[in-house]
Image 1 (tube, one colour):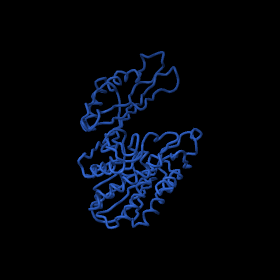
Image 2 (cartoon, one colour):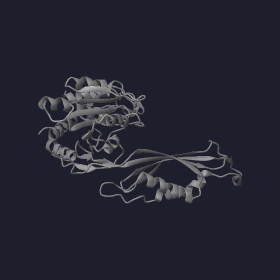
Image 3 (tube, rainbow, N blue to C red):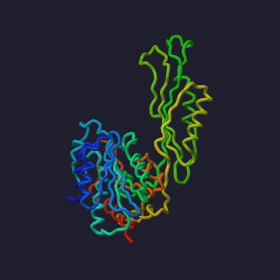
Image 4 (tube, rainbow, N blue to C red):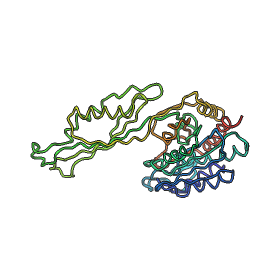
Length: 377
């Protein structure tokens, strides 16, 4: 059994559902302290964060990731217990196998092998690990970055171990992400008896035309780096549960995944304009989950990762900014070059989440080669 597989299995066995680390970070520390890393735990609220670094000089290369996993869903639908790592036909099953305990294990074994081969490498290596990436992500990576900035620790390169691959490890990497803007809209009406609509004001009816316009609006055309901005309703809630009562309010939850062609301020203004033109009485609360970011294709880190993938797998990788958000959104604004590279993402968050065992070792080798290209002259 390879070191990467053994460590992945050990991590999967920890039921680390957000934001419970469940002992994962200690396992990582036990490995890394043996090769000269200095661990610093940074708990905020209920979230456990780990900053563990080896070296004090620049450039600073950081592996970033998370120990938390999403809930399992109905356990009876899993072929095996989700927190009992199970191997069948060269595939490792378990919650977090792909997202992202396999990536974490590959980071650690890459550090172990790289340092054994190149003990006098240039610069420093660190890992930034949180137990709240899958949740609201308020007390996780964002808080650690605040601390690092205040004390002047500048990250030059950051490789996030999110499952970026499509069919085989390394066939796609993320060199950026769209921005994410959340809105909670409350449309105000007047509650009343459904038989006397003239005495009430139904917010569902009032919002209908505005909803249609919001859904049909072309917010931008995107650009060569990002697809067009997307507007999606995630939930609509109203009413008392009775069939004879006109509701007094309507709550609408929605999200923008937006490109660099617009700003969050512009989106807020345009939404307000649509709602006002439809003469709605409303209140709205906004939450900016993350700004869009992109690492250029000719950036040092991007070139190194692409080359490492080619040398280890023979694949010409594709750079992409599609998909959801990651903790890279908290790191990139500091001026850090950020690339995401991890296992195949087909089974993430699903029942019977899994990862190919052979690809775990490949991923570790890609990480090692990336370190060599950046930190060994």
